[in-house]
Amino acid sequence: MHESTSAVWYLGRMRLLILCFALALVLFAAGIAGTYKGSYSGSAGASGDIQVTLKQADDGAWKSEVVFTFSGADIKTKVTSVTVDGSKVKVVYEFDLDGNGLESTITGELKGTTLAGEYHTKAAADGSAVDEGTWKGTAQ
Image (cartoon, rainbow, N blue to C red; front, side, top):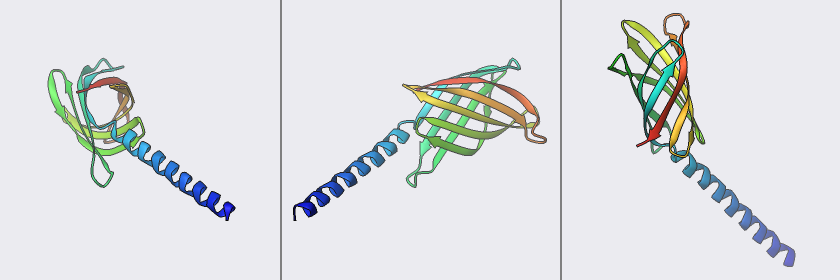
């Protein structure tokens, strides 16, 4: 009987530990949700402001909006992919610049209230590299 009580106690503690771990992962991932405003700077000389918004839907899917400035004009984008893994994020979006269809991929990691990383932009038509650089935004 004593072994049975120990086994039940052990299984109960393990279930509680697993539940706590799963809850911590969910809360940590949700911690990246928000709006980050900052700047970007590219190797081709492009630079400006950037705003990245990350939201998690009730079903757990992530959504994002990305707006940046180029030569003083706001450039709206169409986000095609969002991946969040803990404190890391990857967002792929399309946009048009002077009649050219482009696609950018930003990757970043949240440290404190700052989300920062790299971006790579390519031509949508043939995949040729256009620009790459860094970006950084602070939670609003």
